Length: 208
Image (cartoon, rainbow, N blue to C red):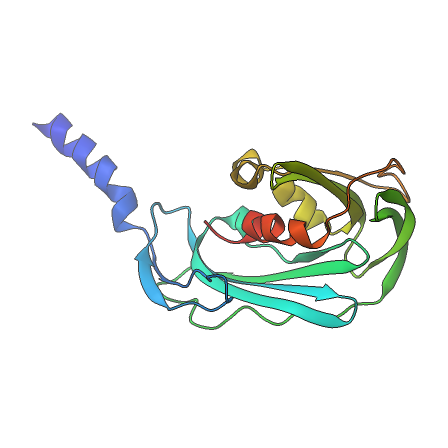
């Protein structure tokens, strides 16, 4: 009887210690209805995330979400494919329903001197100037509509770390590789489709 009580106590303990967080999973419009959610284990925090995508200087999407999040999902950084740049900010906390406020807006940043290859059409010999915290070159391939789409550019270390997490990258079937050093992401050709990869990238970083 004592053993049963001990085992039951251990099994129930994570549920007692879990947080209750606001949850808001955006739809196609980028908007969502806020509810509450009990986190599955004590490893989760309450989090808010914001993903902004720009084509040149024009903002083409601003998607915000809230839910329970693991520490590795609380990231801030950007990925810059030249014609399209996506900026991610997040805010995580460790008390019930502490994620009532949205994640902060991301401000545009200046070139930092690093350079990577990017793709224009099917040619990947163009140069993109990395900005802000983008200290890695990135190559991303994803299955879109039955075809493989590959793009290249600059990325922050936090994006590369998230991309190397099998649990996260497996969700979208995306292959991402990062490297350090100017033009280390090679100049071989790739398929066009920058905007088609925005969806998989957002899925990669948005909390599941």
